[in-house]
Length: 328
Image (cartoon, rainbow, N blue to C red):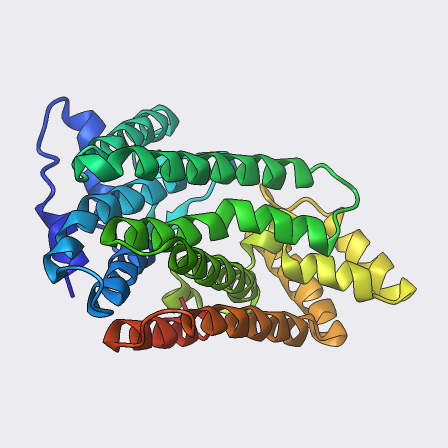
């Protein structure tokens, strides 16, 4: 299996103007799970090891795998500006370390770099890969827009939320799988199974992320705990609480949501986080979320039964389990 971290480290960002490229190097050097490129390469390996094509074809997937990771990090730069997030992966976000304009412009360049990488894919695969990549990118933008609109909506249902995270989070994992499989020669049916695996892993991943934002350890999670609560972000936990709350708990929850602590002193934030978390505990929303995570993980794993069975397929099974039990 290709060491994706070493390949990412080999990318040269020592260019002028340094103010444009240094934040890109900083972002990509900050680590992360490298889930998207790993999924693309593993999907290709599933197909290659299934005996369909020559193993050297995995190398053809590498530019797309890198493009997916660069694109993903581009979205994070812009997301952090929109969310006013101060920490990412345990380090200051780009807009904090530099400024908003730098984060926006360096993010724009990362998007361009992603397409430059896609241009390195073998010629007969470029057009279809670009179409899938663009569908993915549009879905992510649509999901981000829905996420922002939800902030100002008084009622958002669980179904609305699931549709939003499918676009904002899941399609990137789903298309990473599908693109990797497609370039490696997967049949249409296999591409669909790979896509569905990534889609449902993505849904489970995001709900787990919502849980970690409230119940995680900031030392391992990489960012402050309770940020979603402080800004009244529509998460699976909040929406589940609203749908399951008795009148008294719902009134208490709404009262906490009316308390704006985003720019308040630390004590106010701490009190709000503790107050809302207490309501979550009372309503058992964490357990509900964990059940939904198990359901989507089970669907994802069932898709692997439709693919060649080999070491790479086994790694996808293990990855599914790791993603939904992670602490960061």
